[in-house]
Figure 1: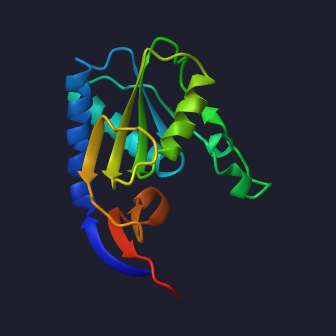
Figure 2: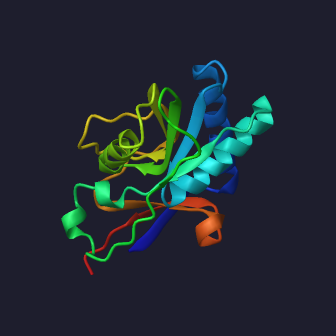
Length: 181
């Protein structure tokens, strides 16, 4: 793989998350009855940042949780048999709540479908909304995000990589071209 270009730097990610936080507040007419849940791994860190931004704006700290969707994926047979699952760490009963599900990149929609299955196993939310930092298209399932940091049209031979300081030591989003070698 050869790095093609940086499409979002630290400032762009910060601005996108601030905008998404405002959109969440506006769409839900506040944040009462809302829970933010990040999909492991990078979705968890993005969810934490959204909770911080919403708290700065509304002076309300939303409950936040994380979801490991490993065993809900439809490609599990391709995963290692010794995959370690952390499960869900949800802050509250999600039944009757508005759950804002957070992920880094939306591509085929299969990760989100798995996350929806995992959430439903933990209760029956009133509503589930989806927030993603990057929507790159190429959906295989009828899934559409409610909140998008950046729409990035891509080809299937490109990889969108979200790097976060919490995991990777830097905040940036890059597009990389896959090579034949």
